[in-house]
Image 1 (cartoon, one colour):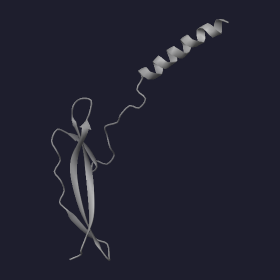
Image 2 (cartoon, rainbow, N blue to C red):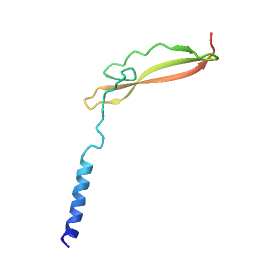
Image 3 (tube, rainbow, N blue to C red):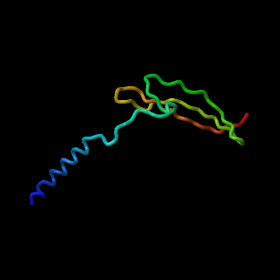
Length: 89
């Protein structure tokens, strides 16, 4: 009988503890700085490149775009890549 009275309190306490903690702590680092950076200024965009893949060529355009902020207010920059098939010269 005593367990029946205590069980709702234990479940409520477990729920509060579980909801009060961070499930996943964010990491603001990358082993590859060529895809993500943290800074106040936007990194310079690389020049367009064209890769010859035999029967066709691919033009690669990379741009840095803001993707949020860190907890201390610095900007997160992520590199977006666009590929397009172009005629080979």
